[in-house]
Image: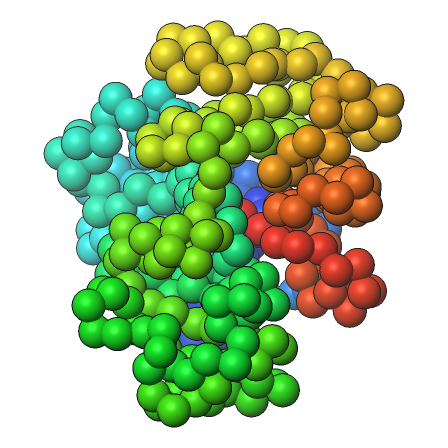
Amino acid sequence: MKIIVVGCGKIGYTIAKVLSEKKDIDVTVVDNNPNIFDKMVEPIDVIFISGNGANEKTLIEAGAKDADLIVSTTNADELNVLCCIMAERLGTKHSIARVRNPEYMLEFNKLWKDLGIDMVINPERQTAREISRILRYHAADDIVTFIGDRVELVSFKVSETPEYFVGKSVSQIFDNNMGILLAIVERENQALIPNGDLIFKESDIIWIMGRPSQIMKFFTLIKKGPKKGQEIMVIGGGKITHYLVELLNRHTTKANIKIIEKDRSKCESLYEALSSASLERRCLFIHGDGTNEELLIDEGIDTMDACVCLTDRDEENVFISLYAMRRGVKKVITKINYIHQNMAKSLGLWLGNIITPQ
């Protein structure tokens, strides 16, 4: 299989790296920066071509006439769409375009196939969706989705609700009418396939599977569903924040959101974008530095149900997250772009939920 990846930023590099490690896949990377690979920490086994991915000559050189797939991940939505259209006209069988602009996603979602683009990916929107899921399930630790997000596998600690589980058997708590499946019980680093006689211990981690609505009912049953009027502080006002507000606005339990952004023009742009979509009603926009302790205390970080750190700098996100956890915020979500998750965990930082858009 021959695959062309246009744009070697964070997303493009990650896609090219994963694909290059697969058998029988030849990857060609196109980027207009001839020195892009010099900045990469880890080299990848691909063919590199320097040039404009929307240029016919460059695409032909990359093998677009007989390629199976092109994935365009540059920072310009319009360029990604154009690259895909050009490549398919030259003979590439399938195309995937990265489109980040919220206006394009909302207004032109039905037109992508008419343009000949097979799939549109939006890492920022997907990241916001993942954050939204974590906020929806107050007690959840990990969430894995299946069948286009229609089925979820969710884990949570028994210690979060010991009075409901400890000392009771599986058959006492779970029945066929719940609409959820008790999939796995983690105990002392072992995965147990539970039967009806298994007795829960406080150190257990439970994995349940079902439709989101059924899982929500279960968490409400054990009194760990989201409370009404959840107070959420978001540090950083980029595209992920825009999508997150949009998704939280759809929840049945509406959240009150405080957004702190230190770039004034960025803060104003986010307000205008959300105002035009009538999504700002439960939002408070604050122009300020999220690393300023005084500001965080004044804006009530001690009373927050959740803190989501979405700035462009990993160091700031980690720093603010650790501070929020120290202040007693129960649900802390940290966006990390460059620091590897395993490194963050091995440092013993005990960050609650780490999200990586890649």
